[in-house]
Image (cartoon, rainbow, N blue to C red; front, side, top):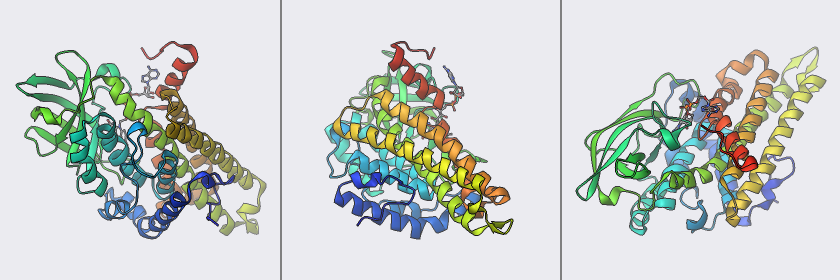
Length: 391
Ligand code: FAD
């Protein structure tokens, strides 16, 4: 029998196909034995150990997960469970995969030409090429659809990019970065595959981050970066094409949020069974059991929502608002859960060695990236009312 996680209270993992369960178990064992021992030190030092890439690219996590272009034998449901499994060990590790597979490969998978897919996707899947995704700018976050200032100007048979990007994950060591920029011709957002050794491209690590300290983010500047036509994503003609990528990746952020909550919850369960106060393990006290049981309720409701969204993704029926609801709900439930788990550890809940402090801090980045809770709530609000309330 497949050993479902104790924190998967209703056994949702059983909806996976047999080969997916096998792959998930192999990922779980590698993540526990090879990644877990690294993460607290790496977090403390704000470093991204290369071993993370080596371990992850041995698993079927890359290149099979986006809607109509999905070619592999793994479902979106498997993609979701693998995001949960990784975040359960460390949210930065899940974020690396989210950027490489979802945002970078997803941009090419959804919007690239046949040649662009054939050239880049195998290299990104193997880890030979590292990718990043540059949408957010210093002056434009939530309003990316309207507010982008980076420009793309036609130049002969190619394009010239100028502007700045902020918060770009994996970009301190990426070989290519997908850059979203507004065309000076039609004012629409286009996507470009930018080699990071292109003259005029620079990336600078964002220092002193207090959340997701293992995954590295960069500020990027683009000064007259010239690209030939082959570097423009063929089908990326407006922000709708950007949104088509985010629709897929947001569901995986919801799954990663559940994994982050589970990481904190599992640490809290173990700790409260050991820690003795008033003559008995604190897990025997009613109020501690209430914290644990409310945590498990949040986790269980979130897994149910994520399962349905991924199944809709597999069926081709998932819309923006479905992913947005899962992202907003699951990150909110995660935030409450990690706070309850931190509380259950008392003072040790703020010390890195007991794990919960890391999950607690990392939850904040997941809550805000790939659309804040407010933005995702407004996407749901638009679906309810037919009215966009963003502006
Ligand atoms: P703002 O847009 O300035 O928002 C600030 C606050 O105002 C939020 O609470 C927001 O919800 C609220 N707000 C704004 N407008 C409204 C409104 N109309 N109504 C109600 N409330 C509103 N971006 C990338 O392109 N690539 C990446 O790889 C990437 N990785 C990231 C990793 C991390 C760790 C972080 C923190 C961010 C990352 N981002 C990345 C950027 C991320 O997507 C943005 O931070 C996010 O979209 C929010 O934008 P902002 O930070 O500029 O906040």
